[in-house]
Length: 223
Image (cartoon, rainbow, N blue to C red; front, side):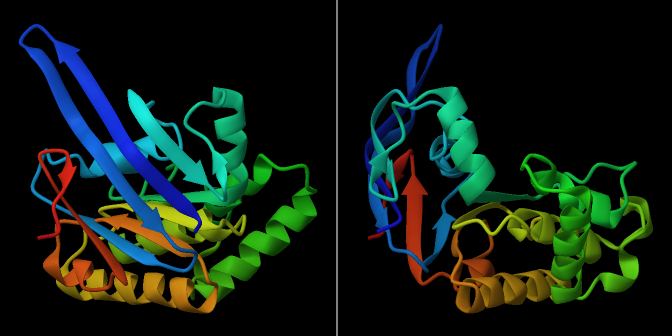
């Protein structure tokens, strides 16, 4: 077991009452799983993804990562876990527009105490791995959408995380590019043994999951 949620509750209070964005959600993810999280808009998918490593704090319940409870630790401790063990991939790519491809990929390494030479070496190796070694000095605007998302994937794995949290990683791509990205995520999951948890609206993307969670009204509903 790499990640476990136990009765996770996330409430938002407003003038009209209380909304349970996550309503006592429980699940267990085994190391090496490719988890797909599906459900209608507003079902709590992105809230779940953001809650698991403290980008959103839960109202109650328990989250366990590598056998240790993490929902009740400090923001600094959570930041350290994210920095070392978690990679994020977003629908919007979230590349810094004035940085080159290799500079964008180096961002997680800049947070570690390693030399600039080593950062360049590791980022270059990852870009070679994903087939973008000829685009290292290009800016994001000089890349296609599929290339930008591959750069985002490279950035998410350059620090060798244990788990990747992907929020609609194919949402801005056409069907052909979506399949390319999904196949690459599958390769990372299979070859590098990186656990993946992916939120998606796409029925095609959902089929890549070795474990599938379906949310409805903040609850897991796999019936």
